[in-house]
Image 1 (cartoon, rainbow over the protein chains, first blue to last red):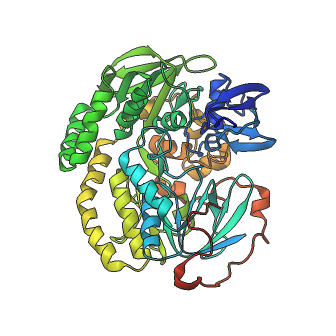
Image 2 (image 1 turned 60 degrees about the vertical axis):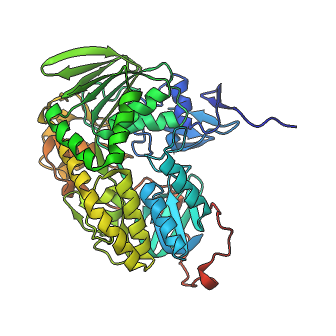
Image 3 (image 1 turned 180 degrees about the vertical axis):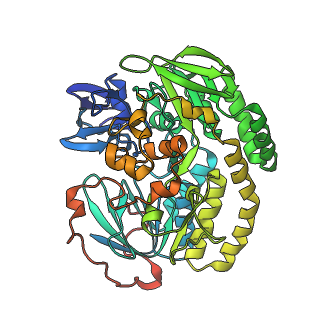
Amino acid sequence: MPEPARSLVLKVNGVPLTVAPGTTVAAAIIMTGAPARSSVTGEPRGPLCGMGICFECRATIDGTPHQRSCQILCAEGMEVRTS
Amino acid sequence: MSEHFDILVVGAGPAGIAAAVSAAAAGKRVGLVDDNPAPGGQIWRSGAHQPAAARRWLAKLDEAPVLRLQGFRVFDSPQQGTLRAESNSDCRDLCYEQLILATGARERFLPFPGWTLPNVMGAGGLDAMVRGGLPIAGKRVVIAGTGPLLLAVAAHLALRGAKVVAVGEQAPLRRFIPFAASLLGEPAKLLQGLSYGMATRGARFYTHCWPIAANGREKLESVTLQRNGKHWDVGCDYLACGYHLVPNLELPALLGCRIEKGFVAADNLQRTSVAGIFCAGEPTGIGGVDLALLEGQIAGLAAAGRTAEAEKLARHRRRRLGFVRALRDASALDQRLRELASDATLVCRCEDVPLGALREHANWRDAKLHTRCGMGPCQGRICGAAAEFLFGWSAASVQSSIRPPIFPAMVSSLGAQRIGICQNAGLTPAGTSTRSQKETL
């Protein structure tokens, strides 16, 4: 009998990360310690608003860029790339 | 792919949930569209420690025959009676007879040196991230800005094991006192305040205090707080800083709803200036959860034609408006918050536009055209409120530049011949849906 999922594994910038179900991709990115993105003048940035408005959390998820990662839940096998 | 509703509700926070449940109970075909993965909006965001009222209303929503689209963001109205919404992979036209806008509010951010460092977030922002799985146990948090949200966030984070090292409220104690007195007219809120007090025991709470700098190289390492001419550094892992709330007016403005004094004008039955469009909750005035629930119910009943029932509830609303006024007065911003940013401090984070570049311009439109401030992905949602406070560029001038798409959208969603005309096919018998009751599209 398969175990109910208590955690899932995704990759952020190639590095595997284990998170609880219901974790947003933005939270996963912060957990790696890396900034979420670089600004147009090269500053490190992280999520600000947590509600899909500021776009500081945008990341490429499974190949699709500019995803608001604070509004997307982590999924098993997901590939996340930050800029 | 198009959907047709009697009543479409935009926003699944407390107001939207109450509106959808009330309209569905009146037998109407109701749709509810929201951009988060789950309903609840900001204040009832899913995660542990949801209040009892949230669980009750979410259960009612689960039982109601409401067609729910979570993860969809409305970005345009291609023709009257139609909204276009996009998810990460799909685009829909949503057609309606009546529309209820419950788009809520967002935090006001004021720039200060270091505010763009990673791990500086809004107060609601950090709270949302924690509810979204960000580990906070054992982390040092400074909470600052203004408004009752600060205490709510402090209490929640403390319950999750965070070390809340300081809470800085910019309002002076003398302004806090009338606000506290107004709570006596709202016993539920007073009890809420006391429970916050208990949960945040151990945290230092300062009034007349605000951050003048966030410090760190690659991310936040400490915050410099200021109070009565003295300043001191507090080491921390996160700064949760927000200066009260501003309404999400973009969709109401796009649809032509009259905006008065920075809020959507709505009458006692939540009707806006546009026939068939209602507005409930924070966009009509920042008033918190209880008022949002009441206004949502009024709008849902009124849109469903249950005018007498709506009017009965509307009488309760008048009493609660005192809280809206008290909150607004208590959250008035100290003028010195205008002086925190230096010329080098960024105001527009999307396009990296510093304060010095904005000073040269007479109004928001000129600043936008010459510096690109407000032209980035957030479309002025973060920098617009700051620019209004810093330069006095009125809310009207900020809202007058609304054009679709009101959120960035995929090129494929913007195509002219997309998606299809809504058929006025009418309802199936007795207003029931041919789909199952709780279908999530």
